[in-house]
Amino acid sequence: CIGFGIIASCFVAVFALGVNGTYYIANMVRWTLMRDLIMGMTKAFCFGLLIVFICCHKGLTTQEGAVGVGRATTEAVVISSLAVLISNFFLTMALNIVYPAGYQ
Image 1 (cartoon, rainbow, N blue to C red):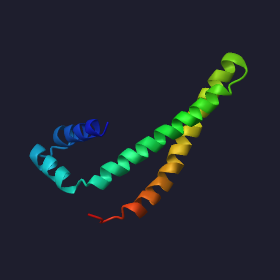
Image 2 (cartoon, one colour):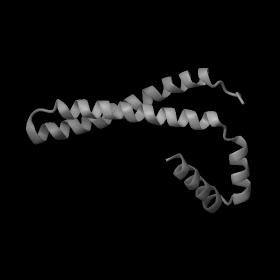
Image 3 (cartoon, rainbow, N blue to C red):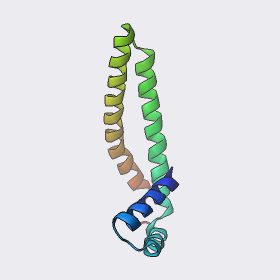
C-alpha cells in the first residue's frame, strides 16, 4: 500500500509537476525516515480496526429490513469517517510523543 503511494506520488511529481525523476527519488530516500513508515503503518492499522468494528456493529444490529440496511450503511460510513478524522488527531499526537519531530 505504501509502495503504491510512493509510485503514484513519483508519477504525479514527474509527469504532472515536471520534477526530475532522479531528483525526486534521491530526495525521497534522503528525507523519508523509518519513523514515517512506522507512523503510516500504525495509523493505517488503527483506522482499519476502527472501521471494521464500527461497520460490523452497525451491520449486526440492523433492523427494519432493507430500509434498515440502507440506514445502517449510511450511519456506518458517517460514523467511520468522523472516527477516522478524530482518531487521526489523537494518533498523531501520541505518535509524535513517541517519535518527536526532528528525531533522526
